[in-house]
Image (cartoon, rainbow, N blue to C red; front, side, top):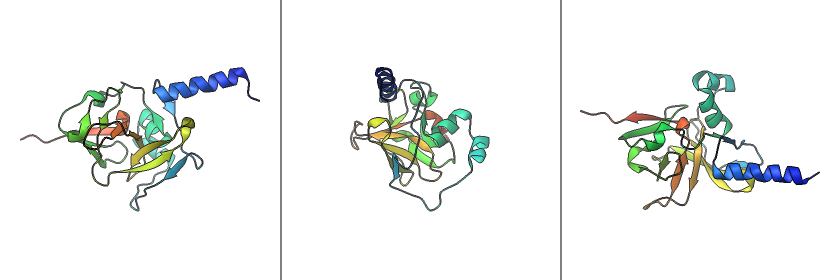
Length: 171
């Protein structure tokens, strides 16, 4: 039965999810997600194996399709030269050369490295978005939007906790 209270609570939940305030969770399931790219060399682990190698926050984002709180990642303001890798399997994903300040509170990139990520149609929260995941381990990284800078016009809005930064060697 739909009551005024349940309708109001659903609206508040949707508003929080859309605004990116606080932690949100978009569970992947057969009804809301369809994979459009797959990797035959994909790394697979049991949930317990992932829990042993990831922090609780990394597990929540990478394996449960969660979202970190905006502005919580030090990688958002990192502009050093280097490569951003998957925190789950160390696959190189993004170059610092494509990183830009989107003002969203999450690390943003205009394009991934070649053959680094896959995408999935995400129909959670009553909207359709394109989820981005690591090509190798399938870990949830974030979403891509069509409001980025030239030349791609894309904004790969990534969870910093899903990434690890490897600075370029100096010498």
